[in-house]
Length: 68
Image 1: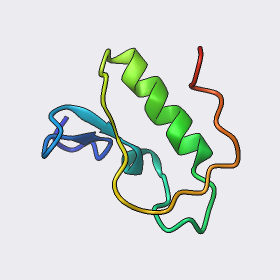
Image 2: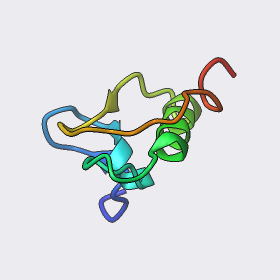
Image 3: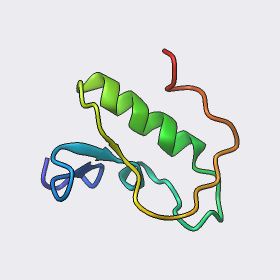
Image 4: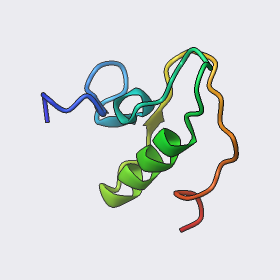
């Protein structure tokens, strides 16, 4: 997993990082798909921590991965 940017082993062990799924912390582009994919990854791997680094995220609407 060391080469996979979607996982963080730093401050939050084995968390799923939304940046690894293409989230844009500048708010310039919609990050909905990245958040959905990161939430799905948390569920698939039984990880309970979704790591969202500081930033401004544009999310058109939150769905997809939530409530499946």
